Image (cartoon, rainbow, N blue to C red; front, side):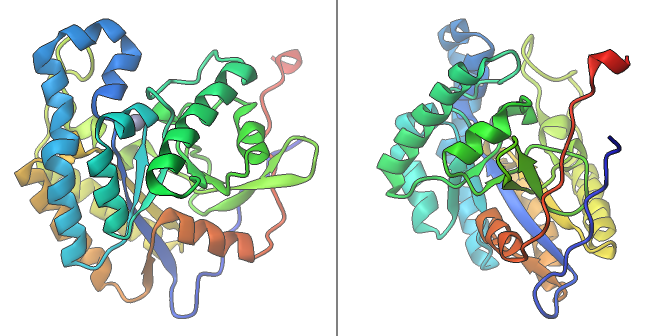
Length: 292
Ligand SMILES: [Zn+2]
């Protein structure tokens, strides 16, 4: 079977592309999932706590200044540890979506194990926000081939972890004929690669200039705008919440918002719009070992 590419979509009247500024509120969860023993490292924990404590308030104010509504992906444990921060995100008019419980990298998990993670995360977010999350982003963008079916079974509307298109599409799920809206992402549009350095945990030690990061993102934005795609930027409050980085991000937000041909919206709104188009689902097939 030959794979077929996702096709360009027609955006709302007057718009030729879409954009969403997304934030992954990983906080301590992302480091604890690597090794729970990191909980003993006070300085490392404080590096991660900067996100909810300092980054989120700064970023919420930034978004409010430009009347931008966004999507925050929140691990369940982060919501347990910082419930007031999650409430502030909701009060700011933003979407809170699913990002695992302890930021579990799903690789190697059985469907049963992964289902438990999904249910645990949903339970926490729903109790805190009053809304069942409809969007999912796999930690480290690592989906299993069985993940889409687990999400569809649980009523999720969309996923944003795959990288094979410029445009959102309906991802065919299992053999049931159901589907999940997929809103593609890419490593070039993530601040982790630009800024993250934690000794022995992540990064090379090279921390990039916010100017360089913003330049990459702006070029990607203009490229996706030209092809009618969907620009999805992923920032982490513990990284991009720092003052110089937030300032560079704000210039980009200002530019994107000034483009009247670009629809800026939370991913939930974009996914609902895509669902309303009634697109034929496309299959993404696992390479078959028999063919290797
Ligand atoms: Zn994450």
